[in-house]
Picture 1 (cartoon, rainbow, N blue to C red):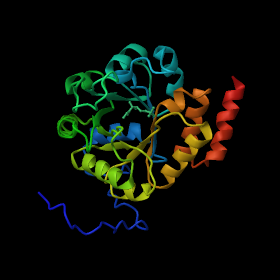
Picture 2 (cartoon, rainbow, N blue to C red; picture 1 turned 135 degrees about the vertical axis):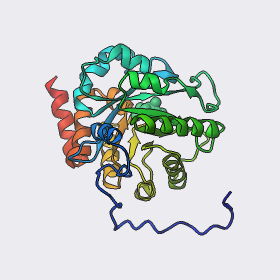
Picture 3 (cartoon, protein in one colour; picture 1 turned 30 degrees about the vertical axis):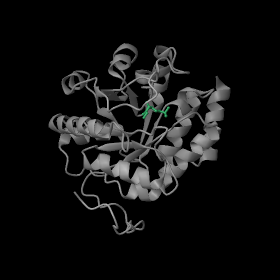
Length: 294
Ligand code: 5RP
């Protein structure tokens, strides 16, 4: 094990040099197989290289979350505005049409519910690789608990899912959890995102933070940022704008879309920032236009 005391501080991020790419536009995927690349190309639009994922998996630990009470009514109208629908197998099966052309990311791990004060001990597998293949999943999401009691177990689930995904060409999305006791610093997110990528995640979901450009630079696979708690629409768009400009390859957003007074307006506005380089203010106009047209 590498000595953790008295190490030199990392500082050579070469922010002026683009990531070394070799034949395929998704970061870190140049040496993957055709099927994996094909699924990644459904997730990350070839033109922008970025993705908008709609997260509606909250019920797996929170039950009927505000805005998702009638998940069957909320999700389908948003599908045309996003690249990926991220949910549990139960909700995707019951509420998303199999004829929908939007890619899917199935959350394949379960965890303890919000009834428990403590953070999870790592959870377990809720959807195995056979089930993911049967559902024709384009991606599998695994929750991880870096720096918390569930760290070791969740990393094992991540590594096993990534191995199975590599075998069948399905990318794995490693999700960085942030608990009450966990830091939300550049140092923490650098460590967590890098650990997930090193253990096989093809995509990492993490949080925007000060110094995000160094977090993104040091992660060899694309980072998509989580939305987190509901913010005023303009603030959420500003966060997305900063993240994209500092190296994120998209967002995986839930509450900031489905808890908005215009979920469709927000989904469309986020898409403009992520794919078309709109500023937050320009995108806010798109949100208002759609909101006022309903
Ligand atoms: C927690 C998760 C969530 O279940 C969800 O995807 C979060 O979405 P948002 O914070 O944007 O509502 O990934 O780690």
